[in-house]
Length: 284
Image 1 (cartoon, one colour):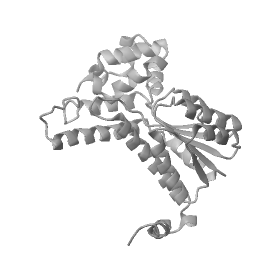
Image 2: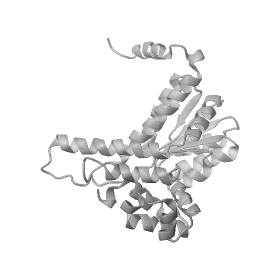
Image 3: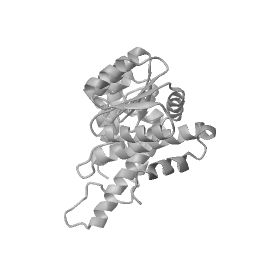
Image 4: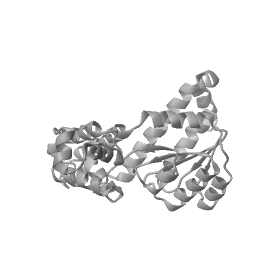
């Protein structure tokens, strides 16, 4: 598989400008010879990259992995991919082959997200949402489609929430938030100006801020109490927009499940009740 299409290597490139000088030496070392890194112990990596072992670990965390084993696992998974090079998509390939490669890419994106998923952060997010006196959902652009799904499932389980998409209303709603409330956003880039400003304002009021985003160290990270990272890379033939939505929706689904488990006694057979309620809006 070529370097350009590696989820891990793409993540390194995406975060390169956010790394310290010593972490960039680690990045350069991996980008130059990533296949050797898979089987190298941390001491050897540190020596050949010209950094300390602590820098190796810090580098892995800076790009969203829990540690070196997680980064190696991601590299090894891509190396062993049975589908060959993802960029090998030609006009003469059958639709079934193209579909297989696209679905593999999307599946790999979810696997990549699993490698950076933090169980403690997930628990903290579910706890904060469950205890919130009110949840204000702030989002725009493509990520707003994911946020609307979150609004839908949160509302179904009785979470007191509102969704605000207009940037002028967002900043007003954020400025009026209070401690005990939660500002929730989905922003893949973590750098959408209106979203970042609104979440910053909400953070300043003392509200808990939860963000689903793609990149560690993004501007949104600075104003987020509980970050949930998806990670992701771009590719000429595989839409990052759609893959980002798939990963974000999976995280929303996990949060929804955690909230349902915390409220089983109150919700009862809530799926049946929701189904009956929605049936009113469906033609027989």
